[in-house]
Amino acid sequence: MALLAIGFLAYQYPIQKSFATNAFEDYIVSQGTSLENIESKEIFKDYKQGGYFINVIYKDNPSLKYKYIYFPRGEMVCMVFDETNTQLDASDKKVKYPSLED
Image (tube, rainbow, N blue to C red):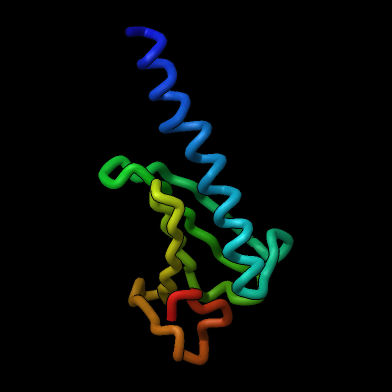
């Protein structure tokens, strides 16, 4: 039983976090940017849905917050917020790296 619990915790945290980080890195390359362009990055576990939130501010677009959400089934989405925490559409001229879904 203890081995099962250890396996579950290993998957939920370090393994899944690694999946989220790899998916994030692939996603931002597809958006046309890179890890070197990141000014700040925070990663949080999403306990409700089981994935991860990755909040990013880019050096060349510092007035916007990019929020990436990694879902356990391997999907990732990106939402962009301005300084007033209003979500922006991909068509907004301030959004340099729009979501790949739009």
